[in-house]
Length: 337
Image (tube, one colour):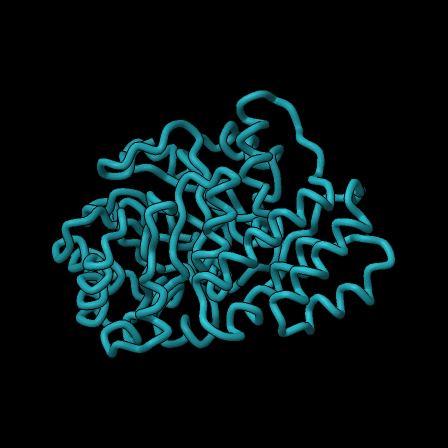
């Protein structure tokens, strides 16, 4: 699979952009575990053009992450074009446009998945961004606004005509948010449309190797994107790649292996972030790394309330010592938004 001049090989695995989750520290452990392509957290065009601290901070990318895309969202074409030009200066490998975020405060303003209610604006905005930047431009969207408007087959064709180099499709409508099963039949319909020449990446409900292979085989997508299932489970990329290559299912990592990942992730969080933010934003990850351990309640409480890096390191070491070779009977559950 190729996006522009970026060669990703066969069956590439993408890490989805997720707000307050896919920061550089998380991207680091996902890359170590086999993610082929990653994105920054999505960035507000309004925040970026106003030099907002949070938005500008999200532009930070590192060589170990490449190839990597910067994802932008907004409802005004002029602001999105300006933000794309600013993002291009950070030297990502692609610029990605978010037409898929279903969150109310974003979609109701006409940004993210809200753009699915205004296809002409979606198309004109995409065209303007493609013309403005030199980097490949890609789009992430959903199968439609609601059940009465599941129009992704037509929309994907028109988006392709703007000059985008790939499209990622989440298999739910905006109205569904993250409820109900993802509908991959429409993703497959886009991929199998003879007019479609650009890569089609599928997203939604990929929770492990079996599901990943099924989506590649049944629907013929060029790549798959994994979001919530990677939170607290960055090894999901390793597991999928191993299964696609060998047909063998790897066991759930031992607690010792999870502790090693947790420490690696935590140290990168301390490296990339200032102050207590590095600790606060690690808590959801630490909670997920050690889900399913027996008699863990008291240790978990200490782990998720400590504000001292040395104490957190000590607690993770304690977890490793106490539960080291233990493997949970079930896979770590998918993180819920």
